[in-house]
Image (cartoon, rainbow, N blue to C red; front, side, top):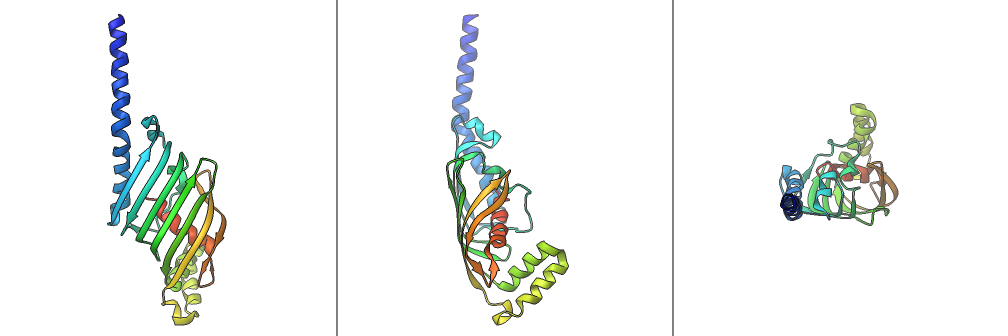
Length: 207
């Protein structure tokens, strides 16, 4: 009987060791595959002790880097932060990628601790006409998109000249939903809050 109990204990210990070693790379690889769906490169590292906590979406650190990625701004989860909120530390760095009308030069999203806000730093460029049409369609469907497009035509260059986007924002997750606490920056006079949500939601959809 004693040898049986010892055997069970050893087996469980081996499973824990194997899981601790093998599970993080496996789950990290799945995130990398999602990020690379439209092309580009990605490197993801997930950490947790014990590693089985990752199966429940919890861990100590979520780190991702990528470049040349393509994000579909039309695909948005209702709670885009669901896959990040369970991690204590978050570090995401996306470069030379695209999200809807935005060409991302660099986007960093970080959080240091479970209770702190996410810090977003976005440098990109976009054509005001494309941005206005995209935001208009989200607010009012096809008619809203047309109104946004017509409004952008009054801008210099008819809204076809790409302008820089430089936004810094503090963001919280309200039950997984994006809530912009404070955002500094704009593009062609459009408020930075909605712009931030478009890019962020597109990226988080792939995580």
